[in-house]
Length: 88
Image 1 (tube, helix red, strand yellow):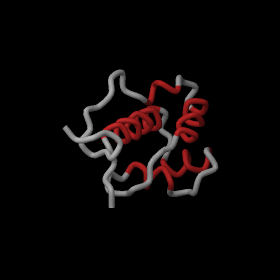
Image 2 (image 1 turned 30 degrees about the horizontal axis):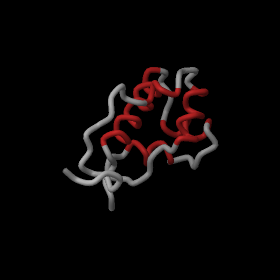
Image 3 (image 1 turned 120 degrees about the vertical axis):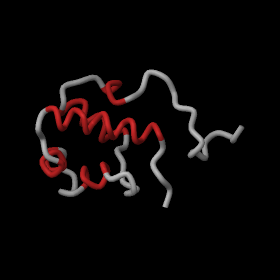
Image 4 (image 1 turned 45 degrees about the horizontal axis):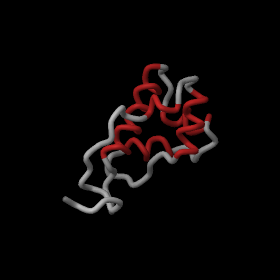
C-alpha cells in the first residue's frame, strides 16, 4: 500500500482543521458532500489510501466558503515518496 505524500497529508489536515473549527463530524461532512458516509473518516486515517481529489477540494472550498488555495501550501514539498520526479 502506498503511503500518502506530504502534500496529500497537508491538504487532508487543512480540511480537517476547517471541519473541526466548525464542529462538523466526519460523517456529516461526508453526507453533506454526497460521499459514502465513512469517506472523510477514511481520508483522515494516515494508513488508509483514500484521499481527496481536485473535485473534492473544489466542493470543499464551496462548502467552507473559502478559497481553493486555502488547502494548498505556499511552496512545493521536496518529496521522496513520489514517482513523478526522478530521485536525486
